[in-house]
Image (cartoon, rainbow, N blue to C red; front, side, top):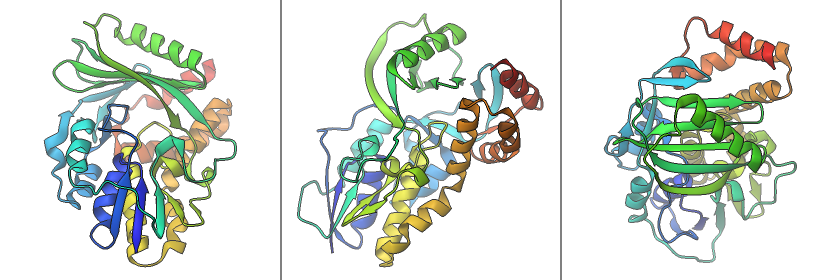
Length: 318
């Protein structure tokens, strides 16, 4: 069987290397080389195990291991979040890929938010993002600023380089969120921008991004909503690629959608939680809060004992 992948990002590159073990696989990407758009942060232990499957030592690409994650001035102890050199990792993976475009039995849409091959998502929810690489002399923690209409972030990349950005319901909101983050965490006194870019992020769970399969086209990663509602898309992209590979290898592609929905129930719960916050449904937020805290405390950060009080204060102000 011949397989053609479109998109050589995190999901497409990983999937190509897996599929090449059992199938003749090609990949096409519109870029001549990997770019630096977003996706600099991930969950260490999960990334390490997934990349080990294709013979990659993820430790070689880690840039920073922040001690804390600070969300709206609430300090959480980081347990699993790291930043990594995404561009160098992809550059190394691309050297192993067979680039080209061939007629194929299976075509894979790994084009991220563009979802260039699958049918468009009904009532899609794409947030415009603005992102910068900048120099700052600030303690290397993760800084996040969240509002109902979007969020802004600052991730340390080592050597005083930071990935600073925001995503919101529209571009004016995105700019305002970025401005608020800079003022709140003193990111407006840097020594200059290294580079900047704009993009989009899809904020819909997998259940809202169907179909996953259309004729001979199969989606993976962000194309089918495999992104945390809090913005982390690397692990979901890798895991969705792994599930697709296993489904094709076992000749059980008809089970792919079911496996994706079962694997990413936690993403569905996150999106439900964020949706309730955005709609101001305070009782529903409180009902879901213990579940979401359990999910995030296992993956990313340990909450402080007074987190509940902080969240109650935040909700009552809205």
